[in-house]
Image (cartoon, rainbow, N blue to C red; front, side, top):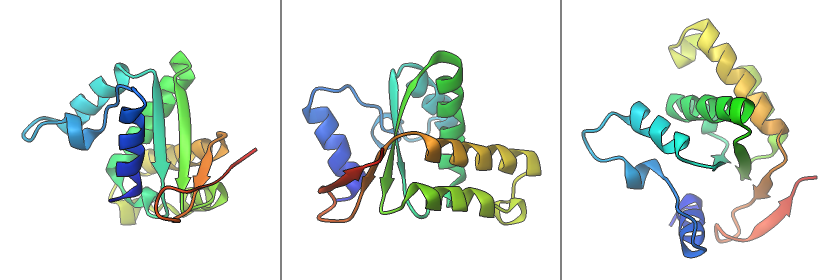
Length: 139
């Protein structure tokens, strides 16, 4: 079982109504529009960042959408740094390459800015001690 599975089960078990794309988007549906709908109906977002987070265009798209909601509507965002420190996320932001990402320069710059922004938000850091043990919270 992965860390995100444990987190999802814990939130559900605590009575939170959660939206996770793996659970809520049906096969054959448009992912981006369903994700936006799920995020629009949410009061908060938990963003699980890992050492490979910046390699996923889908994750970066979600992050941009979440941070736009945070800026415009005060949407609560809780970053969870899983086996990666916030400063490493900032380093990922600086290393994004539009050629490698096969994306336009402007889009990659927005992704980079979003990674830097989320790394500055007070969050939680988790390690891999059985995928569940809390290490410490920053600040």
